[in-house]
Amino acid sequence: MDSPSANQPDGMERRGTGGWDSVLETEAYHVTPGGEWRSELWRVAVTQFNQAADLLGLGADARARLLEPRRALVANFPIRRDSGEMQSLTGYRVQHTFALGPTKGGVRYAPGVSLGECAALALWMSLKCALLGLPFGGAKGGVRCDPNRLSPAEMERITRRFASELVPVIGPDQDIPAPDMATGEQEMSWFMDTYSQHVGHPTPGIVTGKPIVLGGTEGRKAATGLGATICAEAMMGRLGRDIATSRVTIQGFGNVGSVIAKELYERGATVVALCDVTGGIVNPEGIDVDEALSWVAENRFLRGFPGGAEATRGGMLETPCDVLVPAALECQITAENASRLDCGLIVEAANGPTTPEADEILAERGIPIVPDLLANAGGVTVSYFEWAQDQQRYSWQAEEITARLRSHLEAAMERIAEAADRFDVGWRKAGQAVAIARVAEAARLRSVYP
Image (cartoon, rainbow, N blue to C red; front, side):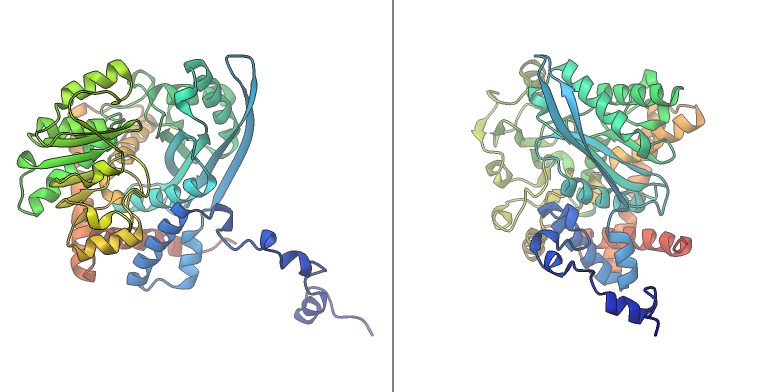
């Protein structure tokens, strides 16, 4: 008698695991969906996603389709140091979803860059774009290195080599990188030129955050910080408070934090604490932000700035203030320190600065949060404007960029406020629910191919 066909159920049962039983039982080979990018930041992102998905009653099929990233690339590549030494580096690019359009997200250089970090940030970028009504999915990438120990020539070699590794998976209608931690206009210029050399023609739309002369846009460099400032000012107004009389703590004094400090300082706010990677400065009487900016321009870091007492990066978060702005790293507000924060409002200018456990503590204490999904969205919003201008070969004026940014942020804030009232939840869950619902609807309408 013929044996059952291998493509029939009984044949599959007889075939079993093909002798892989003992291998699959070992922990090293037991990789569940998402196991490749399992990390603390991914855990935070998944927890937040599922909490919002529960509000929507999102089914298992939709969760499976929307939660895991669509694509991930890991590239190991060599670069030549100025000393002549060869060094191997690892770079990543994660593309979360194409349901709403091409993917969009930054490129960062930092010692802690990992696949798990990029996966979490790509998921958040998808939701950020959906909340703001932008025609993008989320992406994130970077190279694991210490940019503070690299010369400009080494930075150029890393950027160009990494860009060449990404050429098969990026494009102005496929995936558009942008600046992030330790990258800026110069790195985007190198990135654009490398891609353009590969395809044989100038392609300004391949990246955003470029210099204006190469197709950049007015206001992009300050967009994330300005967006967070707009959100802080609007939220204080909703709470019946005046930003001009507020006391502000800002963790981070780089591309984002320095803009927020400057903008709030000019609006009359008193900045009582600042920090960067070298440490913090606290002055209850107020820090002169202009002097701090001048000090950093001359000395690169806040270390040694005489405008206040020294504090640790973590300790300065507990400085009494009206508005706390985490504008640096992920997972800075945790279950360990959430109960000690002394603030009236948190504006998340960084990605993922608050863990789910800290969220619960802050909710119990009645401290409202403007979530990163909104407060950090100024950068990608103005990046969208830049990309649209590159596509049209037409530029807008700075005043129009600022007006459009404010309009997008205020509209997103109204969506969150309405959802928060409807679901009777905090702004983070409400914002994620709005975003997930939009991505889920797009995925449902596109269905599954084939």
